[in-house]
Length: 189
Image 1 (spheres, one colour):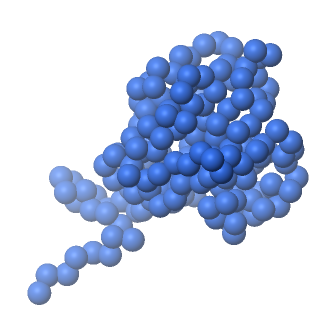
Image 2 (tube, rainbow, N blue to C red; image 1 turned 30 degrees about the vertical axis):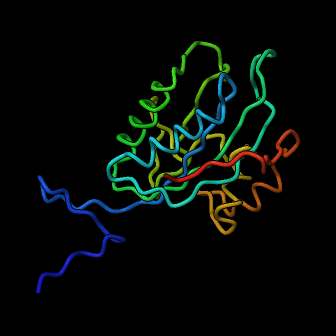
Image 3 (cartoon, rainbow, N blue to C red; image 1 turned 135 degrees about the horizontal axis):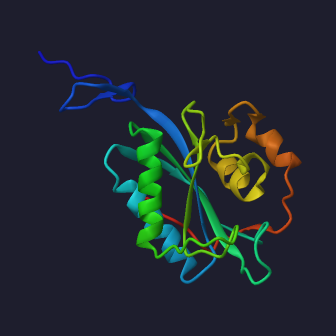
């Protein structure tokens, strides 16, 4: 009889035989230009279509006021997606950027400029990174109610690496301007 490895523990690369751990990752989605809900649903679909990624949860949708954005910025729709993945954090970042590009994300010099789609890596397992292209855990997510609230909805007992329970962080965060939109939903397809 042939035994198959437990898929919840490791995944063997079929070409190299390299064993890669499955990591839990938290991705934050946001959009404040164009068809915002369509962009978020498209991002969920694209994430779910990514090889070596398994979507395990999608939060409710929140409408939020822009934070540290130009004065003309409109309200965002935000959500959080939980995944399990064997992808390296850098490959997951490449995929997130490709998804943004597919939704015509324009990158400018203006910090927090309005955007059709934003896909941020918040946490990827216990991975730490502090270089120009990848910062993990996300450096400002622990202060942002528009990330913490939808994440809390999915995993109320989750811990933010090095900072503690997200429930505690959410209590400290400014929650004004964050409204749950029960009339809008995202689906895992």
